[in-house]
Length: 222
Picture 1 (cartoon, rainbow, N blue to C red):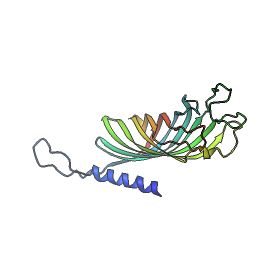
Picture 2: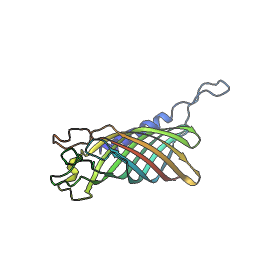
Picture 3: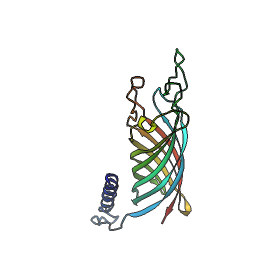
Picture 4: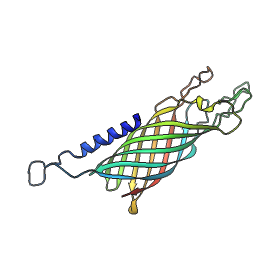
């Protein structure tokens, strides 16, 4: 409910902003109120993402996954706002290096089974857009991720989902291009500001933060 209210509030503010006065015309007449309504858009998108997670417990290389979902937005002239609901998959692989005693550095159970997981998240970005060229926009804004499920990829026991905090706050920056026939393509970089480490053991007191690179294609229904 809170997420729905947040998205509704952002879209309402954007609509009000788009309806403000336009600048004076070439004849030096006083500014006229621009009554043109913001143009709505909505559609679907699919893509791939490469994500890593920081900390000695993990293999810090980027691991690939998928993402997909839908978006709604408003835009007028060079300004726009976009809200999305996406499902994404990520792979978290434990560090395979060992210490001087031969014990794994990466997160593992008592018999050495490494903590390799497939993680599914619900991602909700709310982005502001600025069109630098016709059809070409830059995007920036916050994103909230919530974990939907965590599946062990090996014999690591226990409730794997409890290893991670269930929500994560990120910052997003990206670029998007609208193509003919209602097609769009884009790329984004997401940086996690939240520590998602939920392990209360002394071996892993470090912060676990994510970074994600995404590329995608979509279709606008208009």
